[in-house]
Length: 493
Image 1: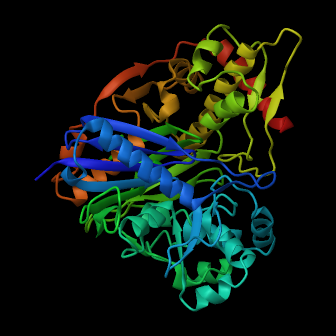
Image 2: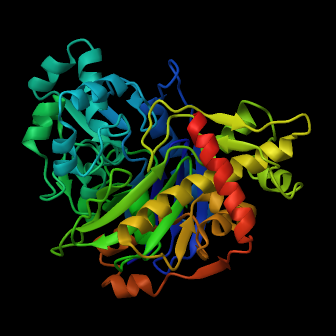
Image 3: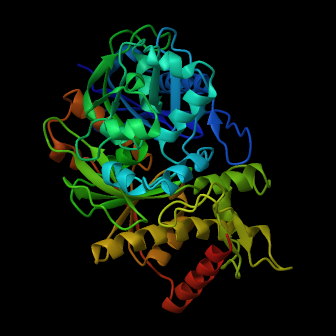
């Protein structure tokens, strides 16, 4: 039997397809971007058909690069942008509205109304989440209300809801499988964190009918097989699935309580394994399902999310024309030794953990006549790192202990300057793995487990390898100056 695994990493700005061997040798990687849609300020959408087209194109390109036949794929793993919401017609598979992206703030007023009605504690107790438009439940309700006839069609059982994992499995299986996994379901504000099943009281509160919901499965199981596709043959099993950040935690082999990782993508997401019990921390952090494997108890994580990380680099590239390619920011920022008092708070879509301020907006502060593009570029990297430091500080306050090591991944973790700034601000060593596309790696490992290519977690753990370690080098005085300026900036957003 072939041991090739296809990992589909469906992200916020594009889809990456990775072909790996069971030993995690990367045969080929291909990425295809798609358009971001901004109907009005604070609203973010994707065209579901554009997402699907990017999957088909990325997978086809990866197969061509690898020079292998699609029939040699033993298993498919999926990882995805999590809270992004799609509703489609069961009969045709046609979406009834653009996907509403996790970054979208259109349901802010709905969340505020629920909070003012006194439901915040119930939501947190049942789901572990905060009442924020980030999560999927209010997005689904918005689509049902906004599209004429949608609620009636839902009541007749004609519509299906899904986060992007569910949408892709539906398409890959020709509509045979309507399923999600616990990691994605836990981000909808509709799943009981205690039971791992849909919660009737939350469904009633958010006005989402059970008839549209997928089955909640494990993170490694046989969900279905490919059917009716032009770019993949019939019968390839889909056996692994997790939301991107949980997949990255798994791909970083953070299997022990207290191990943590930070993924630098469009946003920055710091997760810590908390074992088989959810940890309800202070208001800044949230408990979430990490994964379930077979009959073992659900594993939970503590999470803090910064909504904008790599997205601010894209903003400097696309909106301000600072550079042509995102990777150029490192060389530009390195031409100055310091941002010279310039502070960028990259709250382009509000502030996430631990601040949870949906009304915050981006701030560039401390600009003088001598400020250059390089100072602003460096301030942008510092802004990313400061957000992550705030999250880790909240986690350490909960633990009443210092983290000894942070594992990092995602495209921006290849930026050595950003990683050095991060370790300096955290005062914690940083470990970067050989494979930094760890979301895809986690999906591949879960698929391998689901297909029987790996026997257990010990076999998975043995595959992980470190590429480089970063250690703090900034003086205490300089670090405190940076933190003081950041705090002043936060007061102004």
